[in-house]
Image (tube, rainbow, N blue to C red; front, side):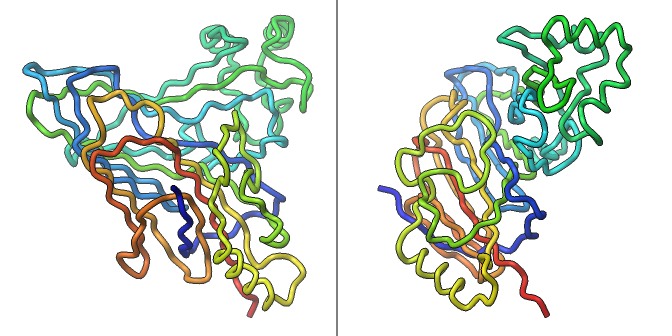
Length: 333
């Protein structure tokens, strides 16, 4: 059974949009092998950063050289830019600001960008046309961006369906798939520590009264294939609702004194190593005491003025982590 924990987190308030789009992120993926075991995983989630530290062990008798991948969320560019209103942490191809260390040493993996249209890869076609750089974080609209493409080339892209009229007259129709990857050798019987950090793909939403939130759907704007949360998405319980209502009651303005922020961390995919995670350590970082975090998780304990933690032995993930932050709007002087 899941339960709610109310925590406090201090972050920068949202921009003045009704809501910004967010997508789920997760950890690294290994090429399938039955001989690599995850000894431990330490996961720290905050609105400022997601940080993960893994310890892997090759239980076989020979070294294993395998591809390791960190996928960034897929971006369906056919949605335009206004409808999803993506809240990119960085205005860049590496929009999460991914950083990597192996056994304490920084490593620079390769960044790969590929494009898919109706299930078909079109990366080379778009590269040749100079269109692979079209992106929702670039300045201006897609109509502005395509001005750099020769007119005859743009006409071919339109006739093939890769660019069609949508939010802009020239809206890309492909899904942009970005990932980091590197080769990793796991010697037999040796622990290998892989650490990475990145900015969460968080979304924000201006809200009215917190009592209006049913907890079963996203509060703001989730961009992608919405998965069934299996009931209450964020486990908003009566105690948390009372705390929110009390803060709202003392608020002199008609709007809520909170901005909602949402983060989803994907735990349930790419678990292709041997057996369960030996030791799973979850840390949730808090900040300002007037902010509130709600999520479904068993066994969280307060271990410091700014930290809540959970430790699970022989952990097999069954659900992703969905977090709803109520961030208190700074009081005017």
